[in-house]
Amino acid sequence: MTKAYPSNLTHAQYEFLSDMIPEAKPGGRKREVEMWDVLKAIFYVLVEGGATRFGEVGQKRCDR
Image 1 (tube, rainbow, N blue to C red):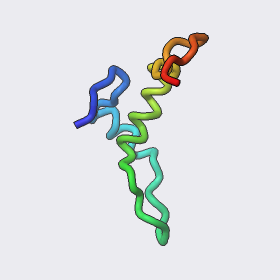
Image 2 (cartoon, helix red, strand yellow):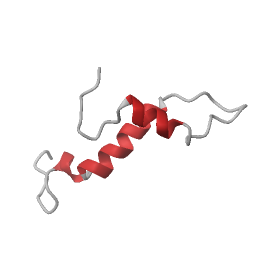
Image 3 (cartoon, helix red, strand yellow):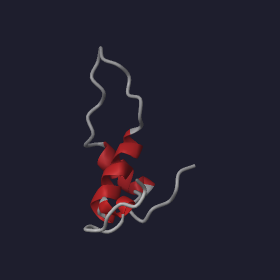
């Protein structure tokens, strides 16, 4: 089970968007990740800002 974020899609939202995602190309490797997870990651960066993992913009990272 993954952590719930405010940016996570509902099943209804995913069903709406899934029609716009192209199918995997024939003859290639099978997809290793679910498109649901890809969309959740994209929306996380768009909604949460992306910089929150490393602190606010302009602050030095203290983990190194």
